[in-house]
Every structure is written in C-alpha cells, then in structure tokens.
Length: 47
Image 1 (cartoon, helix red, strand yellow):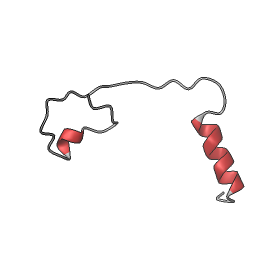
Image 2: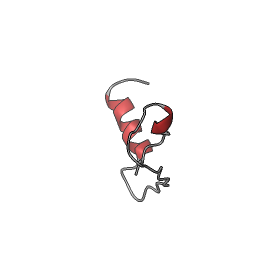
Image 3: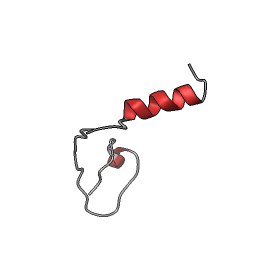
Image 4: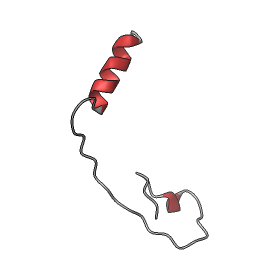
C-alpha cells in the first residue's frame, strides 16, 4: 500500500505489487494546522 499524497509509481519504479490508498484528514480540536502555522510565523517574526 502506498499512502502518500502523490502517485509514487509516476516517480519511481516499484518492483513489487502495490496499490494507492486515498484518505481524508479531519482535524478535531486544537492545535490544528492553521494554529500551529500561525504560532510559528508569529514566534519567528515571519509576518
């Protein structure tokens, strides 16, 4: 199983049987990705 956001078979040759797995991510609660990025940007004076 390949669970990456990209199709690895288009980039590298995989010499084994494989299938691509799709998934969705639902963030629940805090910290979420936006909160983490906002904190990182603020703490590193990037904005």
